[in-house]
Image (cartoon, rainbow, N blue to C red; front, side, top):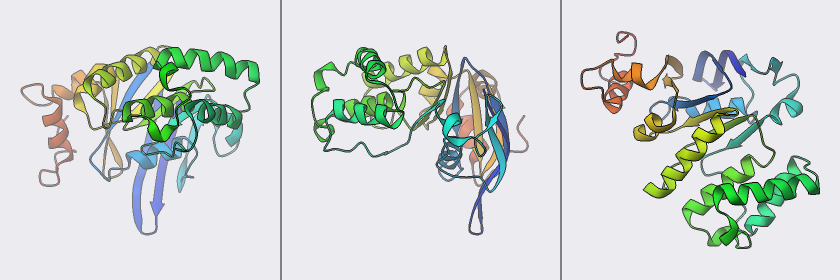
Length: 246
């Protein structure tokens, strides 16, 4: 379980995240929505320990990340948008490197490698350099590295960006399957993927959490049940409907 309490992040004079609180539980696939600049990536970076909060706390299974960082973060797998994949490495070398970062034994790495090759169909590219991979295989390799240590919690930043429909379908199937045994929090702009995988939505607007609800409930805020239309209305700069639509 992740518990976020009063989380804020200030860069200079800009408050990027403002007093955000929520709880994520095992079995949930949660979509993090918001317009560009809403604070989504900053929130994910705070949750995975890349950034430290200006105020507030993040607890994983009751433990404060700031007080027990290394041990707590072993429970988290994170795949950031455009994260470096070390193009000069082969997929095998990259996954071996990720396993070493998490201090996996040779036996555990061998077992996880076999599992991940099957899940992500990496066998055809396992000995290819990452520079030679298609965008779809790069995504798969990045996610595989992020979960090499079998974390309870998976954080994904725009994981479907640039994928074709078949690749998106495979990714969504993986997310739904993974959420059955843990927690998945993904930042995305693709509303059809939100509806396909998410049991819950966290909607950020100008650094504030303005909605914590289900896709079905969010759709019903406007006639037509159009999730994209509701998103536009709640996050529009002109309308300022965020406080009035409930």
